[in-house]
Length: 358
Image 1 (cartoon, rainbow, N blue to C red):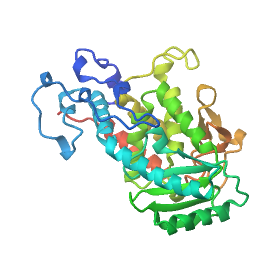
Image 2 (cartoon, rainbow, N blue to C red; image 1 turned 30 degrees about the horizontal axis):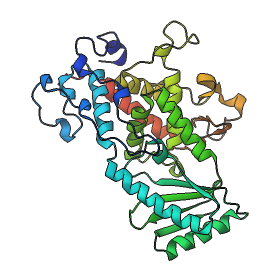
Image 3 (cartoon, rainbow, N blue to C red; image 1 turned 135 degrees about the vertical axis):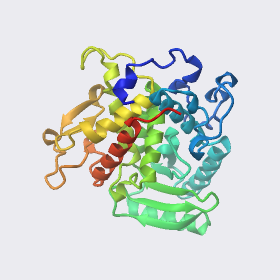
Image 4 (cartoon, helix red, strand yellow; image 1 turned 180 degrees about the horizontal axis):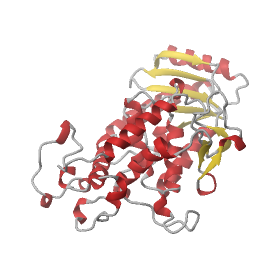
């Protein structure tokens, strides 16, 4: 059943209260705290029937067979999948310990500075393969490039890092390395405050819009599996993806049932409906040649030409305004967006094709 047809059926919870888990109940990893283990509430009650073999050989689809509606079944699978990939308290502690070791080495060189974590670890949106982003603030250094080299040398001498790379020609110079004890990838920059500020913005947005976290997690992994998640190879980076999802949620038709720019109503609760609608927007409906997306003023579409984001050489690029800096297009280097769009299109067609239930 397609998305429009499914919406006209039973609402989530109608006649099947035990079979619908609101996405707001999904466990989150608050900043500075260890993530919660998936609670029993995310499992199906015994009254739902005897447990069947795992469908498709994956451990997060044990319960969705009980749901007949395709989009409710998709919602349930998203909830269970996000619980499955949620890091354990031990995994979180390993990362915290690695950060502490690296922070100690940095402060030995720059004792007056502070070392802040930002990115996916700070927002709770990290995956097992996600790297750790650190920034040295209030360092007082005059030459960032030489300071990065000095830090790389200190990490190497202490045996804390391997595979060290000092990248000085990037827009934001960094030192990249693998922390020896944990095997985790680290990126460290100097005196760039927008990273921690962006993390705070994302945490606030996730608190206001609970679907933002599960949708972003699913889409991050979807792009990662297709090697379309790294900006340096033309993919969609994490920050751009979060902004895309946030803009989509703020503009979703369910929030404006009477008129497009009227008072916002309650957002659609089904993650299945929201995922399908996201895929359709960014694969079929958005005219990327002329229009970009923004979270400004409660989210809106904007003219790429009027804002100077249009490129004659690459008009097919997606444009996404940085919520913290409207002059910055966070998707301007995602030159493989046509491949991303094709992947979204294929996923949309697959999810909305007519399938027999079960």
